[in-house]
Image 1: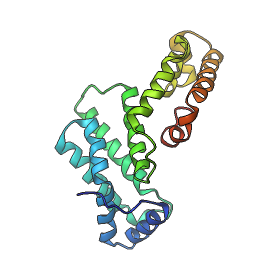
Image 2: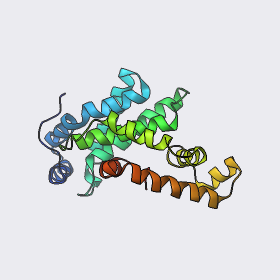
Image 3: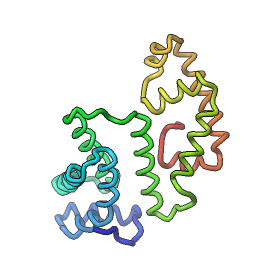
Length: 204
């Protein structure tokens, strides 16, 4: 189904959570219409299988309905569905013993999803591909060791201690590289930082 054209906002989210808790199926339909295509695209990027992606998304909406009575008014419906679809997709890959894409690819996929979500709120300053190129170019300009440590930390989700052990350096050295990388990247990407910070935590 195609997405509705009405802007998604906090008030509408809160109202639909309330209607869901009251068992109103029309609320579920509105949420389905709003997010199905985006969630399907997200899952398909992971599993590359139409039926599996469709099942991952349908399962998310089933869980949404099953948990309708336990939701808080502040529940973010988009994030709730996104998390379930992502986990369903990753579980499918693990069960099939499929070699997954690199962690970096998965990170970019998640950022793209959040970016598209923002575009639905009217923030269409530039295309995601342009944003990604600016970030990748800035990362590539970092000194080699600094770049390696930053990627291991932000894209591979390794702790400082793990990075230190892998590179045979001290944790303080790892911390210094990350601090240097963040300072440099925030400066180089200052025109884009507001939207980058909104869709990702890699610069936190």
